[in-house]
Length: 246
Image (cartoon, rainbow, N blue to C red; front, side, top):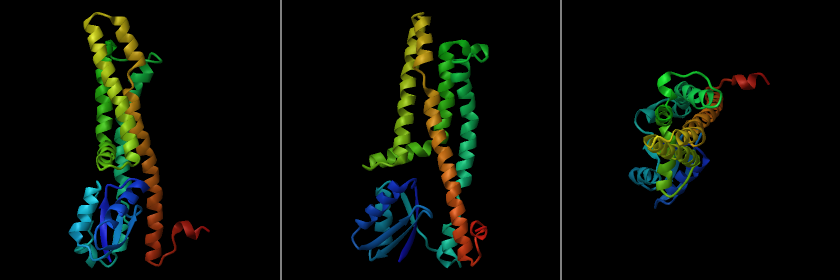
């Protein structure tokens, strides 16, 4: 039985796609993919190169768990190491730090009249600032787009595909409205600019979608980390804290 490290999985659909791709490789007798540990166990006569290539063709990454990992006294414990939660938490905090000013501009000022710098009172300048802030948030959460559209290009879908489609639709619609605002301003039509600004800019929605999903994935990863901590304690022969209270 060969063990592999699999990267790029974000949901149960990803796990299913990887298993289906590897089982189609000639010589593979069985394949079991774990989303919890981002690992895969394969039995059969297929070569490592064919298995890794099948996973990559499906839109994910894979590497044999050989070398130092195989010589380690506890490779299973290494596979259970929680590396995802700290990364997600950092991404969430930075995303919120940019999202809050964006929400202040789009809702605080536009809906409730909160004060803003004078240069942002121009409708097009306001739209451009929202464009910049939302672009920063989307860039920090680009994994949703690379994973979602990457799966789509490989003729499959996952949760990231839905996030990417929803956020992209809102962003592109708002970008089109921003170009229309610039055109109307060139014509001196201030009323049309104000209408477009108030009713057709949804940059904050484009940024909020990946932020909310990142928040949910952070909670999910934290819960998964608690589970893996309990498993590591059991592997070491200790009673997990969550069980010792029962």
